[in-house]
Image (cartoon, rainbow, N blue to C red; front, side, top):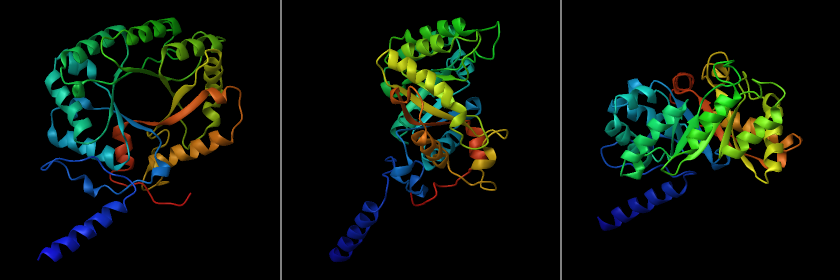
Length: 312
């Protein structure tokens, strides 16, 4: 009997050693992440994030929370960015939110949880939440400013965006400050000045390439401005490539019934194009990973699809 148990243990050890990626430890009674296939390390950059919309429908519902987090882990995401926080925080659902963030980190191994906010008051509100959580695992570690100054006309131009960005940096708890950017305009002809300001105030920047397939040329000029600004400040700027899984963009590319490409495939394609490109400022840009907008469409495109094995 003892020899039989020994043989079984040895076989289990061999199977575990053959896996490419160790999944987060799951406590007994929680979701079974062993259903997730191993990811190939060569296809997984340091940052792999997804925007989570519909948080009002998810937060506090254990089944929906676990479904979201299991899907994220199975698709290789290690960061989530949360929408709907205006209502959540206005209702002071601090305990519920804290439990969700803690579970995200400790049970599912998703280390980075970002608060997506759009104004000075939003960041004051988020600071109050973070300060209220004695357990640091319940706090946001990233603040994400989403305010489309390039589209907002007189309602919020770049100067307005900068005010909100500065307020994001005024926090009593340590957080990373990031923003999603589209275009250098409103006002126009201030690319260098705007890039300088962004690089000065932000830890990392998300730059969108909202196309139907991965297209580095669509974002190259914006990266060039950011890279040149980083060079002027003796910095190397971390950049996250932002894809959209919306039907107007890459839904068909990702979809099982369409191109059937994984989220990692899209980034690998962009990274190959980036490595082949030559532009001023490139040496001061560091691509650290990708972000997908947003959970609803991404999950509809790839409900349970594991990363596909392929040779490089």
